[in-house]
Length: 207
Image (cartoon, rainbow, N blue to C red):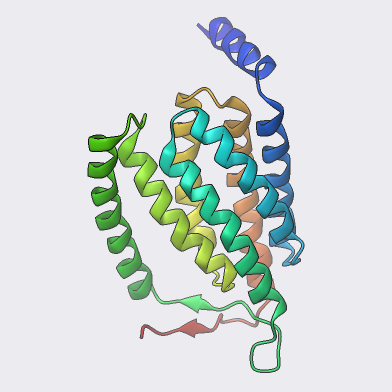
């Protein structure tokens, strides 16, 4: 069984396209730079996302493909946010309250259910509900990154755990390894961003 799995992974690795390879490399580079809060991370994110639109549409994960188109647009927004002085100072890391995150999670579930129905009715999406919930959760988490909200790392840990299983099921083994590495890097990101602000972290209250 183990030998058969190893042979399957090796075969998939040999057939991995150049687009997925470059996209995965730039995705790792993005996260490394984001952990360090270097604005160059958004350039890597933009190119990686554009390539992943192609890769994911090819394996019929349409919401994930659309998500990466959104990532490309958010890379432009994120660069602008991280570059534009806010009130005369560079954008700082803040926190959102548990209540505010809970409202966002509820909205993600509702939007995902609606998207799932649409995908099941009009497309041949391979995993409509997981594809949908990953899309909406990632949209929100990307906004948190652009605004330098600390809780983005908690959202990404959950999202990437789901993504890892989803991409493995579609035979994107290089991307599966990428998301496994992401889980480790996310923990590093949590620690690094905490060091960038004074304790306790400033909490932005619900509005």
